[in-house]
Each structure stands twice: as structure tokens, then as C-alpha cells.
Image (cartoon, rainbow, N blue to C red; front, side, top):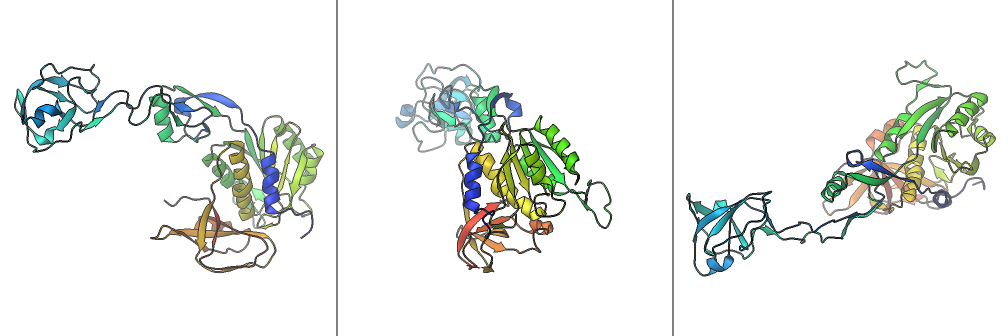
Amino acid sequence: MKNTFIPFEKALAIIESHKEDFPIESRPLEQCIGAYLAEDLTADRDFPPFDRVTMDGIAIQYEQFEKGQRTFPIEGTAAAGDPQMTLHTNTNCLEVMTGAIMPKGVDTVIRYEDLTLTAATASILLDSLKNRQNVHFKGIDIAEGTIIVPKGKRLSSAEINIAAAVGKANLAVRKLPKTIIFSTGDELVPVADTPMLHQIRRSNIYGIQATLKEWGVIADLQHLPDEKTVMQKLISKALLEYDLFVFTGGVSKGKFDYLPEVLESLAIEKHFHKIQQRPGKPFWFGSTTTDKKIFALPGNPVSSFVCVYMYLQFWLKKSLNLASETLHVKLKNDVQFTPDLVYFLEASIESQSDGTLLAEAVKGNGSGDFANLVKTDGFLVLPQNKSQFFANETYPFVSYRSKW
């Protein structure tokens, strides 16, 4: 392999060395789903904040039941949202509703299903009770001052719920880079057009745009023709507005692959070009003097898809200080791959009854066979310097689809 092709691990190291520290912005809570939290969510009071009734029924002093009392005069009713009540007579009871604050002078709740009620009394039908049953006690979930959600977490509906519970009408979140995706090549036509025999529709950029959206990054789309002066003009203009650039195509050895030359003419520093991998060898990565990042992907659909998941996702996670969790799976079938390259092989996943994940390699017809992606769930990462991969061996897996 020529020296211009760098190892997979070195590519990751270079990309990590150029990670970002995204700025922080304040956003209304209802606009925060999918955002990355930039502050800790801390309990502003105990969870729950009071001893909370968990069943509709009556509340009594357990001691009276232990003494043999089974019928209790009803002294009043404590509803959810009412101030705390007090039982004034030890041998009486209070009706209590789910969510109410536990009244003073009582310690045990018996549900309505275990009672016989009259207008004035409640009789317990059970022979035994558990002291302090059916009460959710103050602070048992979370104590005041505890960090419930640490910063860095991506906000799902569960975290939004917590933010509301601790009084956060606005949240500090990371402002993700303003992003543009460029397609390149005169053979590409708009999606709505009917291509001529020598043309294809611009599909790559829509897949990449959708992938970035899943990660919380909103991207604009634009097309570049195979004309150097036009490319320079359009990219130069975009450099004034955007922070993150993703290109598809124009980075290989073709006669009209002008992109590396154009990027160099715009004083964009190349950090590397070409990786010892398949697919996606021509991948190009660089940055400007103002630290705008450029990911130039190969034009073949599977190659660009691989590079987005292996490198752009890696950079985004490192920039957000997210822990990288590697999923490992077992091969279902043998694989042979002779070239001395890291091999990203499409595979479908099935869950076994013993809890293991089994990956069936599904070879397509090369890096242009993007239809094969709909049959699979992600990529096996098969290491370099090895040509035989056998069933039941374990390898890393990068998923682009959730099946569960």
C-alpha cells in the first residue's frame, strides 16, 4: 500500500485531534428534544418532595390495626393537591387519594379494594397489613442536590420530563455546527427529474442529510458542477456562512475529480487523503484557518455511507465528549477478504436466545450497490492484516439501524 494511504487508526487519531468544543446556547424546554445537554440537571428538592400516597383508599395508624381494630370512622378526605391534613383521633381514618400528601398522624394506606365502606366508616377485609404500605416516601428516589442527568447527555423525552420536574423552562444545550452537504458531478440530476440514460439522481446527499438529522445536526443541500471556477465560487461563498462541510464525490483519481485541487486553492488544509480501507479509500479530511471542518467523501453510495458513520459520527461524538461504546457481534458465516485493508462489510443482525447478537455478512455488488443497504443493519469492522474471518468469531459492529 502506498504511503499516501494512511491506516484506519491513524485517520481516527487525526480526526480526534481536530474535535470541536461546540458553543453553548439557551433554548426553551419545548425546543430541546434531541439536543445535547450542556448543564447538569440537579434535583431542586427531594423526589418525591413529600410522603406521597400511591393508592386510593384510607390511611390509618398501623398500631390500631395491630391492636385488633378493623372498622374505622372516616374523619375526612385528603385529595391530591390539597395541603397536608392531620388525623385528630387515633382510632379514626382519613380517605386518601393517589398523589395526595400523606396526612399527619397516619402511616399506612389500605386500598379501596380491600375495604367495605359505608357513609361514615371503613372496614378492613384483610387479616394482615404491612406497616407503612402504599406510601412513596420523601426523598426515596432522589435527594435534593443530586445530579439526575449529567451534562453531555442527549435529551430524550425522559430527560425533558426531568428538566420540567426540576423547574427548567430553558436549558443550556450545545449549539451544533451549521452544516452544508454538497453533491458533485455533472451526471447527477435533481430527485424530481427523470434521468437520461447517462444520468442518475442525487441520492447520497439525502441519505447523509437524514443521518445527520438523526444525530441532531440540520444540514442544507447544494450541488456543485464539474467546473473548477464555479466550484471555487460556490464553496468560497459557503465558507462565509457554514461551519461543517460534507462533500460527496470528486475526491478520487478521475479526470474531473477537481475537489481536492479546489479545496487547496481556497487555503483549506488537508489533514489526510486516502485510507487503507474498503470501501471508502479516497476519503479526504481537512480544515480552514478558522477551524471549519471539511469531510469530503467518495461518491459511491456505500463508500460515502461508511465514511459518514465511521468518521463524521466519530468526530461528532468526540466533539460532544460522548463515550464511544463499541458493539461487538458474532459472525454467522465465514468471510474471506484478501486485500491488506480494513474491511467494512455490510451485515444484518439477529438476536439469539442466549443474548448474543449474530451478524450475517451480506455482500453486495461493490460500493455502488446502495440497494444492499436496505437489506442490512450496519457494518462489520474486519481488521487489517487478516484474510480469513470465521463463524462465531467476534468483531466490532457499527449500526445504522435499530431493530429493537
